[in-house]
Image 1: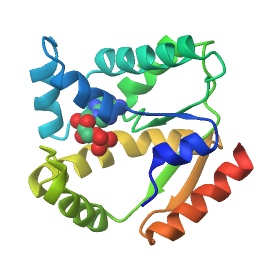
Image 2: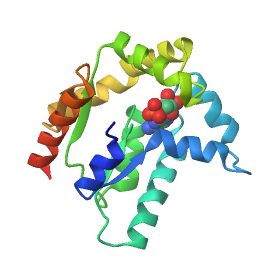
Image 3: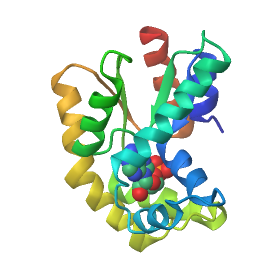
Length: 180
Ligand code: AMP
């Protein structure tokens, strides 16, 4: 199975998942945000941007400090709402360019089915039907309008993610071959 991190490496990007960074912060001993993050994740809600953006920025800065050539990032699951977008614009103004937004478009029921399947081994507190339905609600209400906004800027590259793993991979590779 291909992973976004492998794909990112192939094209010289560093893959940063907002969700993974939040889950790591949640389990970090002594984190002042652990419980808050857990509550947001279980409820399928979007964690306040101050937390997410500081984790993202720190990961980006650390990557570039270790190797200054590594300045291309595939940021996964961000921005997810207006608050995220404003936080990004404020923190990254003049520091980062957004080349394009990769949009994995998929029917809600297919997404729920795949996450329930993943839930058999993921151990994630949000891979259950109740949390997933809340996440879909959050997506439609808060995230979809952000994708529409990038669409109007001509930045969205859409992939039909309801297709098979191989077909989705092939489409993503075509996009990266073109966009670099
Ligand atoms: P994911 O790992 O992308 O499936 O995200 C899982 C959960 O982490 C989401 O339902 C949110 O609760 C939280 N999360 C992920 N990305 C963000 C983000 N950009 N801003 C705030 N919360 C996020």
